[in-house]
Image 1: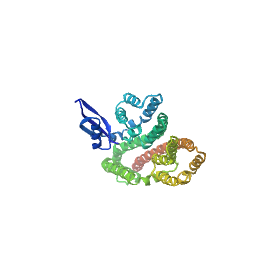
Image 2 (image 1 turned 45 degrees about the vertical axis):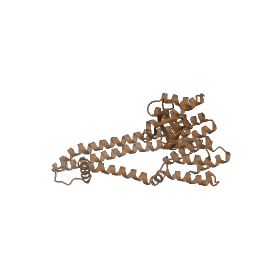
Image 3 (image 1 turned 90 degrees about the vertical axis):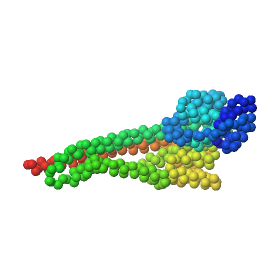
Image 4 (image 1 turned 135 degrees about the vertical axis):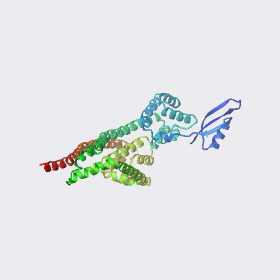
Length: 391
């Protein structure tokens, strides 16, 4: 429900201002008048979500803010006082956000309804779990579970980022070194061979051609890189399903382990929080991060709605995970078993990432060594030919 800010005057002539929730501007004006306030200005609040969406540093604080709110509520602090304390504790982005959430709650909205106005910050599963906690009277416990879940997901993302640092660094350094050689070193060396009438070795001709490309036609290379990047972005936007299907076939099952861990962790977490199976499946499918598997979960949800079992309805998932789901359905401990499965897949993901890096690092070193060796041969072979002619 939209938020409106109003300014006006009371019956005694004193100024009045505040914030209300209403379905429309006309409804907001009527509500203000019902409070015996003559409205001078009523404007809809404009959320700054477009700026928030790209602030990853702000989103990284969500687990900490969630845990702080859980601690305050479990200590018996009223929700309004807890939100006020959090807004005073934080600065900048989170302070403004928490002040707005508190204003929404003060105007009569529940916490879950207040958070729904910021989908870029609070995902659907977050607001659904908060709503379940409000209905069951266990909001503090639900928030604690949310904090645990968000911290585990943040740890996985951090592991992926850290794993990519070294390969990306090596690629950048290698490109800079090769660019320096082709732009500044090779052109000076090949001047030695300009006056010779002998045919140069093929490897030397290729080296000179690459060097000329870097020196005189660098703008073509830059344009090709930009075009490739734009093409990949366009493909990712229009045919994401093809990319996700290809990612699932990458040797090593690194992507599969990550997707299955996300699904198991999210579904188990939502079921443990008291959400219905269909709602949990809908939210869990969005957390997988792969359109192919997401469609598989959505199709399974339709079969479950018709009375089928999840273990026999879902396709594209490994037999071991399906067997664990079947065991959980029979024993009534599906949430617990999914949590254990998520732990297993997360450990498997970590091992496979390390194994991939252990192969990637020496591979990049060998590649750089081969390139340098070819450059040396391309320079030395003509020198040997000149030496033979002199003799």
